[in-house]
Length: 322
Image 1 (cartoon, one colour):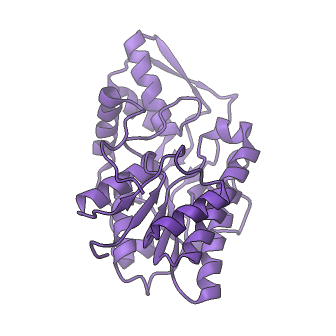
Image 2: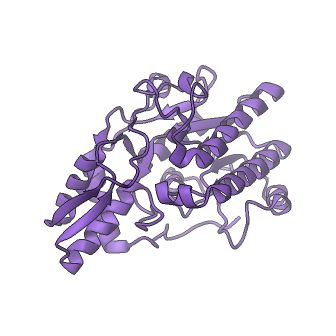
């Protein structure tokens, strides 16, 4: 990427989008285009088309979408499907229409079959049914991946790049215990429990399922490489993981220790666990040249510190409006 390139980061205030914004800013890219939801509603096709026509971005990182944990997916499946499908369709169509050089689309590890050989290779997609508790989100993301590949196939150019990160964490995550993913929700709950002197914290499920977590800054570093390096030998979609997973119970114990909560952890086994395990095989992109660099323990510590000092509503200090 040359310094004149315009890069639209959709979802710049969220977990992955803000990490991409920071990485681009640190790399000295002066033309980072951002819009808040109030400025640009991505579910409205006319508004998206007008934005692309006016700004003519060279690159797009699509980190916007409706996300949430098991409870949110179970309660609002139609919203998850409608919102994500609309955003993907609108942004992809405008990116193609106005000649975007490359677009990165973030899919999800929940697309893989619930019962899937571990670690999960990209070839396992569509070989079985995803976990029922997140199937609406999974179907929307599967559609996005297939649409990326369809554009590339139909027009003979590798411009739409579907990327499948495993469970992301870091600054600017959603720390709402009711709507956030497990890691951020646990941080919020244990920080609150410590402040209130709670004797115990009740958590969903058995704690047995295992998850792989990747820091958002590692995802952002992969994005910069995908936008700027030769991708002719890289097959898409590509997994983004660290090659190590941890049980939810061990994760909860680690976070409790990190924030200094010493009360009891109670597991409500009447609540769902979700998929038993989700470990990605990231051989494709690691062979190509990307490697994660942030150790899990250090990432957990820095994320807890960020949440305690700055809170869920903290966003990048400055942005460049589109």
